[in-house]
Amino acid sequence: MNVVELKGVWVEREGQTILEDINFSVQEGDFVGIIGPNGGGKTTLLKVILGLVKPSRGDVLVFGKEPEEGRHLVGYVPQERIFDRDFPLRVIDVVLMGRLRGKGMFRPYSREDMQKALEALELVEMSHLKDRQIGSLSGGELQRVLIARALVSEPKLLLLDEPTANVDLPVETEFFELLEGLRKGITIILVTHDIGVLSTYVEKIACLNRKMYYHGTKEIRPEDLEAVYGCPVDLIAHGVPHRVFREHRP
Amino acid sequence: MSLLQYEFLRNALLAGFLVSVACAIVGTLIVVRRMVFLAGGIAHVAFGGVGIGVFLGIDPIRSALVFTVLSALGMGLALERLEISEDSAIGILWAIGMAIGALFVGLTPGYVPDLMGYLFGNILMVPTGELAVMALLDLGLFAVTLSFWKELVAVSFDPEFAWVVGVRTKLINTVFLLMIATSCVMLIRAVGIVLVLALITIPAVSSRHFTKSLGWMMFISGLFGLGFVMVGLYLSFLFDIPSGATIVLVAGLAFLLLEGFKKS
Image 1 (cartoon, rainbow over the protein chains, first blue to last red):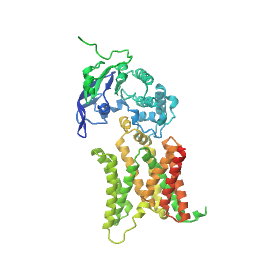
Image 2: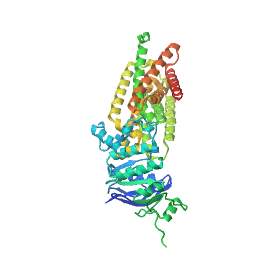
Image 3: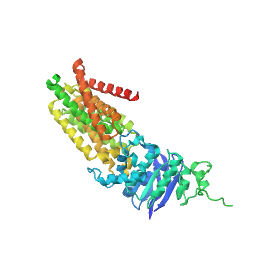
Image 4: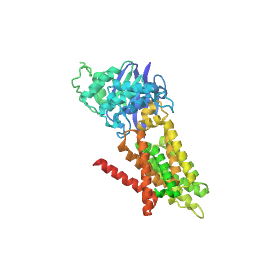
């Protein structure tokens, strides 16, 4: 069964087309990277899958259901820069939000919730910061905390929005190794504007700039990239051991 | 303190305490969500409700309660349906609310109660019955906040994630709007729109410097609110100046001092 299936999805807002006729499916266990320029609709695509944005046309299925009904299987890691850095919350309080799933109102978090939250922090190696104020973390630290928050909700599908936008290269590598480690049984969709990030770790790559170019493979076709970025793109894969681009055919 | 022998001062202090508690609970949530302007809009819409009440010859607070709650919910809906930014919507609501108030008061024949009273209030003249109503409001706010604590926190910090993990964010936001609307209406007769806004904003903003937890922020802003009221009342008594305005200015001054102290 497809974990995510989009058929002819259009999103229009204030007369502008943000996503145009997106057909896209993700199988169980996939690690899909979506690249595209800023403003190309990457975040909107994630929000369509989450049910936060309703498409103006087309069908969206998440685990074979409407996004609203499928959302209990989805974990979401938003961009870390959307947060109000002044918000008076501790790291552990943020992670606990992942345990809201299936929890009735009027009931406080249980000891088990706390236990799970601590385990998740342990997993992302952030447990030493559990009592720190959320705004005092670095970009990379906050990113890990947000992943822990998504993981405590025990998702089958993890959506990551620009997870490495504000971290430097060593942290980035560490981050992907962390994801690799977590991956057992979790399907991951990651969006980024940074091609270098994707090449080593993801299994399939899609290009998105309003329209989507996706072939269910890891190769990026230069012509797709050109279509997405609207100009010839110089492809430089720095020190990446995997081949990203197809060999030139005669 | 010999000043406490005056019943009106005891009542004023009690009123100050009750207002501070309500404003601390609602104000902290408003400030961390950056919704102070919304609270301002809702508080001023209440003025429209007061005008309608005066015109119809009913208790203005009742009409204000109905009018404000409906306006707040209406705006929640309008923001969902219409493509309009929140701050524009609030500005429009604010102006229309005040205009409706002024219009209905203008249409009312004969003696018209002083509307300035609803802007600045008179904390020295709060009747004992009103104190009971305010105490009930405090209890209600406390109960609701405690019941929905984790949802309120999650929706304030990250509404999209809250939705994704299954929180009924619309319900929580409606509850929150109702909390703001009822608080504003219940408190404006006692202390006026301006003092309500001051006590919603300034104590919460000031308490930020002292804690990193939302719960403590509420507690500390309650203390700040009460402190501002006490100092303001004392000064207004000492110099025979208007109490509401004095409390607001005391709060404003304290805020500036705290900010300056923090910077240096």
